[in-house]
Length: 286
Image (cartoon, rainbow, N blue to C red; front, side, top):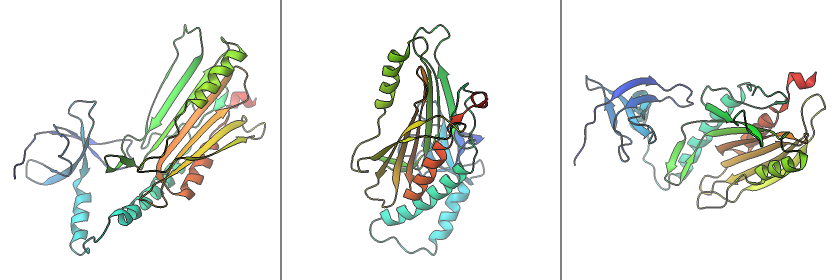
């Protein structure tokens, strides 16, 4: 049996991560996951877990303390007999419970929009970025923001789960007029991909509703909520919530929230939490 030794550099713990990870600069390639990383004294400090392929020499390690816990537990654990899916489901259910609980406990940040209060998450374990149209734009003006977890739970090559993704787009169509704006605005809503049936998940089951908040609480919303069930992990789902404001003739906001690998009860909690994040800005209330 052959093996390779690769030199690398410890770069500290990953910030804004739900899971404890270590930044590591070294040539980690496919097939090296699960290999140990040693310090100069031969002590295991981490386990290879993933690499960022669009960045050079950027990889991630699971701290060795977690591998040690598994090793100690294996001393008395009974061998796994039969399919691993039930045990995997049990672990994922516990994982998503902690993820959802910690996420909902965080208050939303504002998006600095003059009209709408839009739900932007804290960056405790998510990374956010955004962009907008140039100042000299002659068409539809927009501000776009996206936040997502940078790591997921790897099940197999066709299934990664256990992460959250949030985005919104705020549109100003004053330069277009009401009719042209309505056409482009509704087109943005229709173009959203909500998934389809495959070997891992069922086709999404969706429900659409119009939500009228109190006049002082927020704008009327059109919301589509979709759930796809995992075929081999009973009780786990993918959630997609698509929301658009329907109050302005030449302006509006479209938001999307995706959660991978959550229970039905937590899907309800996350949907309510996300929809509750929409409202008027203080300036609009006045």
